[in-house]
Length: 356
Image 1: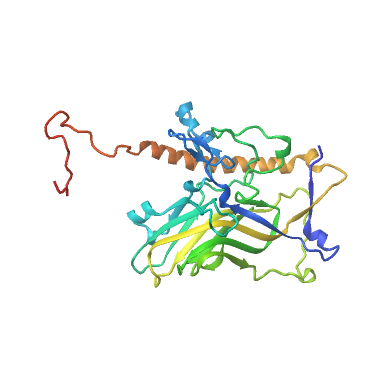
Image 2: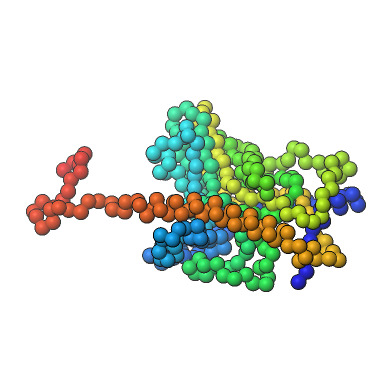
């Protein structure tokens, strides 16, 4: 089977003044419902499209039953709130969280009746610059191949239609073939908070950048937009760079999270926010072209590079998740003491501070 090879857009620009800008959904939170891997009560806990098995990084000391539980996904309750050092205290760490927030069926929005991302951040009540990052439970994988998962979250073999595609594309946090970013949009519900909102993105070079979307001082749903101030629309004024056609990996961007910043002069304590999606408008990095020789079939350079990167991503992802699994297993599960007075006339334990 012939594989699609690439020709740089920069080289094609020399032939004429065409527009290659494209719009894509980077991440759509309405797609991240938990729908697989049931808990002991039969309730789904993970998102089937994005479920990941990190038992491959676990040691031999774990049993097969323990390894079968080592799964996580981008299901909304799995997302985390990371507070900066000046915003951290016991209460803020415990109460800051992400949930699946259902939109009313009667709401006048296209996603009525679906779940969006709901965020609660407990900022300090005293005057202090503070910020919080809302991040996925693991770094979105750029080279994980697309494949279906069964009801237990076990990834199946790729079908012919899925070959050459990636798991986190199509609104799950990854967009391939991204050149220059022209615009970024976030659909969010404002609650009249004066805080600033940033979008965090990472490119194929591993460089993370943040983009200021504006403040949240409004009520109701709104689309916040960042426009690239350095974007050059006129092709003849662009700096043209021509790169070798093969073997270049396809550039991409992936979603790293949001950042909400609170100024010391603004009101503190609880911040509540809701997010529907993040979209980008961008130039294509490369154009598809069918050539006389199948370079990739002959040399296999890109396939090997992407496999090596995939293995590296999985190793880093798995190590972190296994450490968390071990810590979870060590946590106390008892909520109260067992009584030492069972059968006696006074079998109700009292705690310090009790009114009894």
